[in-house]
Length: 310
Ligand SMILES: [Zn+2]
Image 1 (cartoon, rainbow, N blue to C red):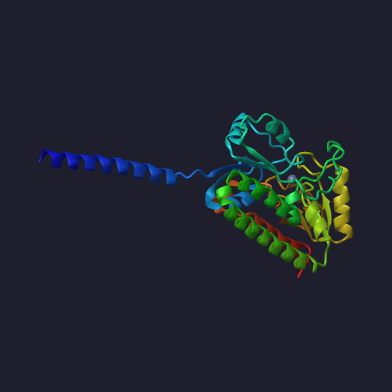
Image 2 (spheres, rainbow, N blue to C red; image 1 turned 135 degrees about the horizontal axis):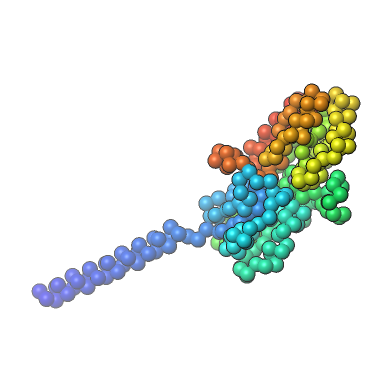
């Protein structure tokens, strides 16, 4: 009997031990380490989130509704960047602060992705005196060929950091690129039919790439960043253009007050339409799960109205 008890005890100990090992294993499984990705702007966030899907935890550094050109990271943001596996930024012309932050990174395992690497950039329009000579237009994501290169740059880092899932990431990146191809051809066929070919923008110079790609003229009230007030001369020039070409619609930008567009509209009886460059989302848009494609499709709807396209 004593021996039997001993056997039962032994079996029990073994089983309990095994169960706890199982539980531990299960917990580890549930907590499979997700790739931690920190992105700066919304287009990069949307790309990274779609490529990583359930295998990555992607964060957006910009707080909701914040205008990105004047954004400077706080010490807490630098900590978050250091804690990530992958840090994705647009490029030095969009995030001039990134170079210093990268130099100061102590996490030697962090992969830094400059998404502008390999993209075709166009020189910035020297609209404001404070735009340094030799600057390039930072809104590279609004040329969909550049956007594809950005996706490629991001997926490269994901595959390097988490090679076990490289085929998964590759497939997701290709899906995203295919959607960009579809969007591009939708833009091309729609914008080829427009009666009016001039975008008058009561905001900063964000759509240079898009206008160039589809053969449109583009006139903006401000330079490549929205922090400088347009001069009275700039506004007079815009208003003259609107009157000369009998332009019926002017476009305004997201996240900043549309007061410039309103002033121009007031002078010219032009109607206003939103043209969202997708730098960042408002809190409402985040809650609604708005995607990069949602924004760009809505923009095309507004361009169709504003430029009288078929
Ligand atoms: Zn911008």
